Image 1: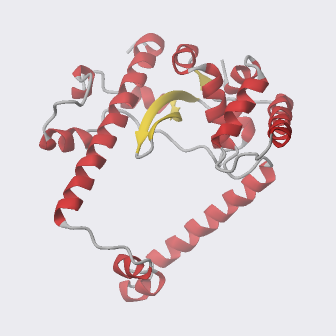
Image 2 (image 1 turned 30 degrees about the vertical axis):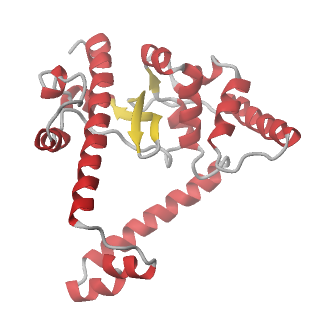
Length: 246
């Protein structure tokens, strides 16, 4: 199954309702909400006009965590890299939870890499996104409607018009080109293009953290990173053992 087929298999009204709930600014009346949902439904149905292409990539829905709590993250992997980079005998294989781990162990395991990193896809062409493979087992576990909404949310990050996405992609390429040109300059010249972090903190009146606050922030970051890595590893392990036979 690919993304397009997954979307087509779910009620567009249900996907649209979940999508609308992700927007920061919500409609202020029932009529406005109905109009917004109907526009989203039309967009979802219009995706059927796009012919998907195969790119050798897979999306797995994984519940990751950040400072706001758990959220469903549609993670994109190159299947060829996944086979080559997955480590079935990693220390993460025997780890069910991070609870009870000492700070030193949390930090060590947070830096452990036992799988290929996922890719962002908000800049990818829509026909490519719609062609990404979906693991039906994974979709059932995380919720098919929820996964549809999460994928569409990412693919429309820069708008519901693919021309806008292309424009943003070109801006990104130009920014990357400019950054590369700056890196070629002598260090004293490079400083003209960057603002020291201390100046940013001063401008926005951000107080400097105490040493204790820095340590607590670092511990929190390690817990989040390890939690997300463990959940990703567990999702990849299920796919690898059942689909790739490794």
